[in-house]
Length: 365
Length: 185
Image (cartoon, rainbow over all chains, first blue to last red; front, top):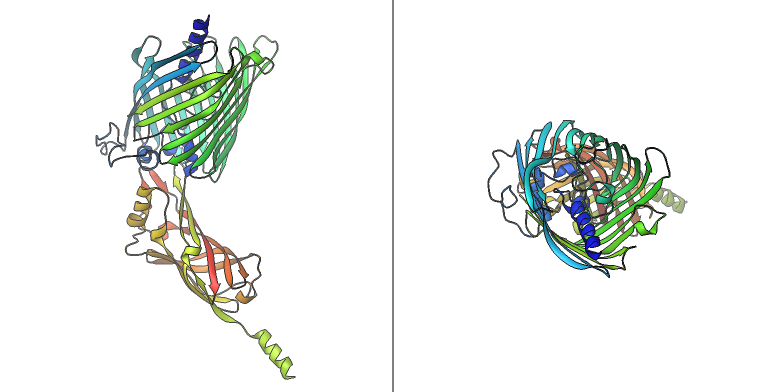
């Protein structure tokens, strides 16, 4: 029974932690309010643009050398940088869980793949190739994420393809209640069309999507809308999601905050309320997720983090609660390397409070 | 009668003097936007050095900001800003010059709470001078004059090329805020 419980927990953990490259929204502390400063994608993550590569050296990493941030490290890509972007990610995870039911630890290779983009001033096409099946330890070379992006004017973007709709704070930690449990985790890329206005003070985003049949054979479709306002190094916003399939309907309303208190200290916070009900009618189930992540950059590239993460899929049922809280670090020692380690206390209804720790090694080309 | 005449004379006499501004006691801040990603670029440096003379409500003189003391907190960006665009080796300061500008209140009559007033001055950067208008808030406390001045410039009126790097271009309008701290002489 314990093994089944652990296996279930671990598979959930794996599924929500295996991710493509995601954004580093803490950059709000330095005045980077929109993901497109560093990433090709409007929602951040994945392929870096030339400015993002430069910033990985100038602002993010503890140590660096002159040419180290380039794709493939020291390969000079200046001749093609104006139209071709290359990247890729390897991500591995060491997890440790210990409570009155289980005590185990294990290493997983979560992700390995390449990403290629043709980048023009007014349009881009991007595709990520490669997927690690952590259960079978297999690498498959197909594309899990691809999109075309049109940028007819500064701030205005049209994006279409298969990707995660722009919803919530796009952190890589998909264990967080606001990512995986809200169905914005690994493997949840959808066939999506999106329009975004990413202005100096206002951000608007509307996405319409249909989940592929191999991921949801229930004819799932949805719509998201977000609006955010930036003043100084503070960005706050509201977000809404409406989704339905053959089985149920889901609605999410939430608020997000990117709070750059100082150039060293920032907070990311997201709270979402979720209502699900059967498509055929029936009682509603109300859920809640809250993520608060505050970080302090002790020296260039090295961040201490305090995490609070709460999820309850049914607020009337205490058995659905999961709360994690504790410290962590995030360290960018050199361009291409990103290390995260967290040691949290976990409260669930199925076991006494225990330890939940993880280490993520992320290497990006 | 003499006393009355003397008091009338004194009341109509414009007091004259000067204000010594010291850079280390003030601060200069500029805000720019990098497009298309709408990056907020903020630079901070010392306040202005220099002497402003006054006669009643007329002020004249030049204060200078040491551009080498400006920083945007990213070394490469600072290097490009100072050496590639501002050319601080040739043009080490940015200057704000007042020429008999009439402020709303005589300097010696300034209250100890901030008074907001518009101003016009000449702003010189990289050897080019343009007239700028803005607003300033100043107050007088004993012999101290303090406050701040804000104005905007179009950087292409001063620079040869629009600053850009790796696909990010600086928007033409840059706002400047100068925190002043001076002593009446």
